[in-house]
Amino acid sequence: MTRTALTEFAGRFAESRVGLASLVVTLFFLFCALFAPLLSPTNPYDLSRLQLIDALKPMGAHQVLPGAEFRAAFAVADGQATPQGDSSGLVAAPCGDRCIEVRLDAGDTALASLQIRGLPAGMTVEGASKHPVQPWWTVNDPRGNGVRIVSDATWSDFSFSVIARTAERPTDFVFLAGTDAFGRDMLSAILYGIRISVFVGVMAAGSAMVVGTGLGLLAAWRGGATDAVIMRTVDFMLSFPAILVGLSILAVLGSGVEKVILAVVLVQWCYYARTSRSLALSELSKEYVEAARCLRLPAWRIMLRHVLPNCMPQIIVLFTLNIAAAISLESSLSFLGVGLPLTQPSLGMLIANGYEFIFSQKYWISFGPGLVLLCLIVAMNLLGDRLRDLNNPRFDR
Image 1 (tube, rainbow, N blue to C red):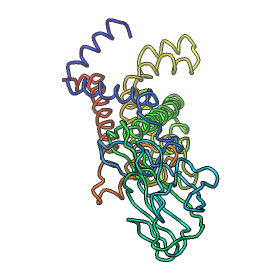
Image 2: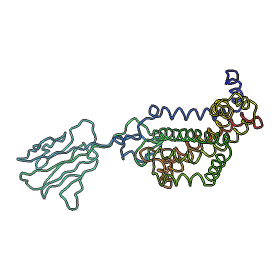
Image 3: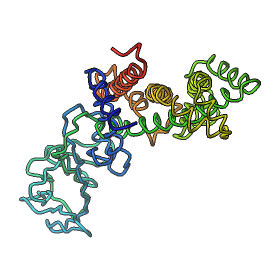
Image 4: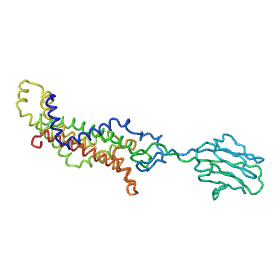
């Protein structure tokens, strides 16, 4: 296509605001798919960074760092407490007659709980609740980061252990789209889901285009038995629902990116074969093909260098529409649990992960991926419709 023709085509395309908006949205999603690792705030597939403490947080919630745990053991003799080994910042000091205070000496760090274990009978911990069976005393939110061990009677030498847990600390990181049941940032998961869905859609539609177009051109050129076999195979494949064919293939082969692509290719190649055959039959009756035959050009050159370029505008329109169909089919298969594995969730699987939480008011897990998938499919369908109108003067308005 020359520069003048390209400029004219772009001008005609821009006449439709809907088509232009669909192109902008499609390019935006392609940009997100290409640069998802750079755009996403976190890596949702890095299991070492996931925290269950961040699970099911609503949109706009802050990330929380879990509290640390400190353990220490002390031996008390003559009213003095001596640490046994590393005290991890925990100190025990006399606080009066028959009283020992245990606290965390860690600056401004706040304690969530402090547990005393192994105290002999007759001793108590102020403000603590005792385990019904074990000699364990627990204080939640201790004041001053410490507790006091007291006894009404004179005590002898003894030992005890301490377990302290610090409070959770909110960070500056905000989950703009909330989190799922695994604690993954939904915004990051959606960006990676776009990347996988777009990759599967483009690869599947592209592979189906190559296979189907090649078989369609072969059927048009050879005719006879070859044409009959290919077209009857197309009729047979089109008689089954696409989702049923995909389920059957994945039930046999298992889940995986390449297997999902294979399933989509086996569903979609028929559309390209039928379209390219009808277009090629129309082109083969034209004079430039007769001239090429008179020059004794090989069949592959006539079909690939002369016939195929004249069929490509309509095939490209079909390719654009089938990308959306491939993404929709892949999302449906993933939603049903037979598509991509859990380690590579697409938009369909993200929607499925949040389905069980919809009725518990945690709508954001499915709402975000569902809205993105809807916008992606609608934008690509509108883009394909606009390209079809431009390539068919009867539909050009």
